Image 1 (spheres, helix red, strand yellow):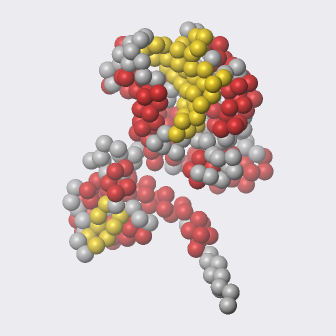
Image 2 (cartoon, one colour):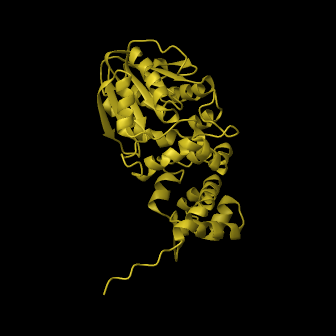
Image 3 (cartoon, helix red, strand yellow):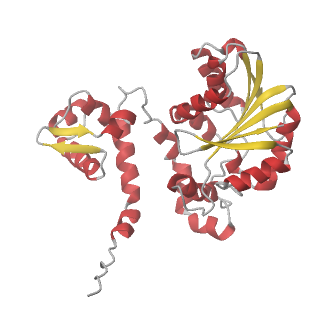
Length: 335
């Protein structure tokens, strides 16, 4: 007899429609520092409530919900952190990522998705929504403040690709928090870093450079990457998490400017979410296209072939793609 096919289940539909509750619960737990409290020994609802100063009912229901969603485990001994929560959501961990919720769940960014139908109709961010690449958008200050922990693994991986002992001059475009240029400066004591970004953002990058002990080799260029002068003679130009905000012709134009700023034989390092040619895998890079649809006029998660074409049209060659210990891909090309 033929095998009976399983009946379809609406679970994925309900799970998707209730997804806003998951992000709200996680943000609440992060803001209350619930994961650190459990990591420090508060394992019952009563102990958690006392530790984070909330009602016992509130602590119980929130902890149970986080358990249902695999961010906690519940045993006879109470609530425990699952490995992912221990690694990334307890402030006792050096890999703590809780701060990223402050940027990813900013109200003006979430509001764009309330009006996603307009972005789908227009093919880009609606006229009354937050455009991430509008001039000196204050969200980038929060990005620099909150997202640096997420970028550290990629920053170190990129720095490993540019290991050198000789003096090098590096331009870090849209430097943000400064993590990428700082990682190169820490690895090479003879590296000079030039960070380019909006002036309010650069204050945070400079503070991070000072904390890292590389401030003496760290200078800045405030302004718009499309209009300010870069200077010349760079050995390396970092273009990290930038190209996805714009369409291909705009990126090619900017990359031509990068090409002109490099020494002969100099290299550009491009960090991006790069989906496979099918554009539906891997999940995180593929899904990132929707973020760009809702928050930019023409941005996208470009495939390797699309990025290679942009780089080649700007004059680059020897284009290589490198996997990283993150969901992103590093492209290196030579002038």
